[in-house]
Amino acid sequence: MRSLRVLVVDDEPAIRQVLKSQLERLGHVVEEQGDGESALSALQCGDYDVCICDMRLPGIDGVEVLRQARGAGIETAFLMITAFASLTNAIEAMKLGAFDYLMKPLRAEDVAHRLRHIADLDNLRSENRRLRKIVDAGESAVAASLAPAMKQVEDLAAKVSRTDGTVLITGESGTGKSYLARDIHRRGPRRDKPFIQVNCGAVPEQLLESEFFGHMKGAFTGADRAKKGLFHEADGGTLFLDEIGELPMALQVKLLHAIEEKEIRPVGSQVSRRVNVRIIAATNRDVEAAVAKGRFREDLYYRLNVLQIHLPSLKDRVEDLADLLHYFVGTEAARLGLETAFSLDPAAEETLIRYAWPGNMREMQNVIARALVLAEDGIIHLSDLPDQVCRGEALIANSNPGEASAGIGNLREQVRTFERSVIKDAIRQSGGDRQEAAKRLGIGLSTLYRKIEDMEV
Image (cartoon, rainbow, N blue to C red):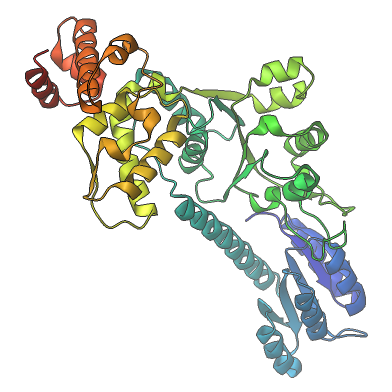
C-alpha cells in the first residue's frame, strides 16, 4: 500500500497519539488536531488523503466538519470515529459522503484495513481516468516491427521494462514516443499502477508547478480548493514527461529535487510528502545542444538520461509501413465510430507506402482519418488522399523522384510509372531475389508477382 497523508481529529490526546504511532509504523504521514475548527483550517490548507475524525468534538462536531469540508470542495476521504450511542450520526455522515466509520474502542487492524481500502479505491479511480484517456485518444500498442531499425529499440525497451530506472526517449515529432512509454509501463513491475502523462509544452508556465506538485487552497488567485499534482496522482506508478525539452529552467530545479529526493511540496504548503514515481521523459529536441547553450540543466539531463532509447523516423521503417497503415485504418475507423469494414485500394496503398511521412506516425494517423471520412464505398482510393501524398512531395529514400516527376499523363499513369521504378530498384537491390524484394517493399510475394505481370517489369 502506498503512503497516505492522514489527519487525525480527536479531543482526547491519548487517542491521537496512539493512532499517530500506529499509522506511522505503517508508513503513513500523520498530523493531528483536537477540535473541529482547527481540523477545518488544516483541511482547507493541507493536502490530506484521509481524515480520521471523531464524531463528538468541542465546538463543531465531526458531522459538521465533514459537511463544511464537502461544501468547500475538499475531496479528502473521511473515516468517522463513533460510539454505539452516536451510530445514527455516523449513518448521517455516510450520507454526506464519509467513506466509512469506526466503532470505539478502535482496533489497529480495523484502521489499517480501512486505509488499505481507501488507497485501493484511489488507485482504481486513477486507473479508470487513465483508461478513459486511452479510449478517448484511441491509443493502443502497435504490432511488432519488421524494420531492422526498430529491433534494437524493442530489445532495449524489453530490458528497461524489467527495471525501475528513469528512461529518456528521443526521436522526431510523431514517431510514437508516447506509445513506447506506455508500452514500457505496461510490461514493467508498475503495470497495475497509474500511468500519468503530461505534455510539458502544453501547460502554461505559470501553472506548471501547481500541475506537477499540486497546491493548497488559497495558494494563489483562483485556487479555491486544494488540488493533487501529477506526482501525487502517479504515486506508485509512472509519470511520463512528454516534450521535457520545453520545461522552463525555474521548474527544472524543482523537478530535479523531486526525482532525487522522492518528495514533493504542493504550492502554498509548508509540508513535503514522499512519492514513489518512475520517470519516463521524451523529447524531439537535441537536449545535449540545449545543455551546451545553457537552456537545459546538465544535472537534470544526466538524471533523466540513465537509459536512453532513440526512436527512428518512419522513413527508416519502410518494412513497417504496410502494417502501420492497416493498423491505423482499423483504429481510426473505430475512433470515428464508422461501422464499415474499410480496406485500401492497391494503388492508394502503394502511394502511401512510397510516401516518406515527414510527420511520422502522427501524420499517417491524420491522413488515414481524413481518407476514412472521404471514402464512400468502404475502400480508400487515391482520390481520398491529400494532394501532397499523391504528388509524392516526400519520397522514400530508395525511390527515384526524377523518374516519377518525368512521367506524363493522368495521376494513375504516373503512379504506375513510379511503382515500376520502385519495384525494379527493390529487385535489383535484392540481387534478383523476389521474395527478398517483396519483403523490402512491405508486400506479399503474390502481390509482387501480380504487379510484375501487370507492369511487365
